[in-house]
Amino acid sequence: MRNYKELLIWKKGMEIWLLSYKLTKSLPKEERFGLVSQINRASSSIPANIAEGSSRKSQKDYARFIQIALGSAFELETFFIGIIRLNLLRKDHVEEVLQLITDEQKMLSGFLKKLGS
Image (cartoon, rainbow, N blue to C red; front, side, top):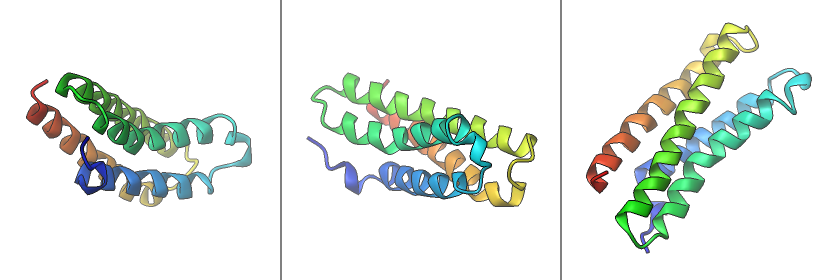
């Protein structure tokens, strides 16, 4: 078993999740069961899948969970791009989380290469 809490990808994933959650508080109430729910699921999926994957015995299983985390990062990025395009939040309010997501995508991709998948 690996100590996922020491991984930078997990730490950044947690930061993305917490910031995403805070940003959803500023979205219109009518989005609570739609967009807000989707964002909260996608953002929490990033560190959760990194943690779950760390418990797997094989590199192949571990890599599969990292791939899921990466997919969630791209999904989350798409939601925030949509939020900007729909003018639900100002771009300058979303830029920080978008940068964190981009960094996380790069790190997860590099980690996958390291795992050999």
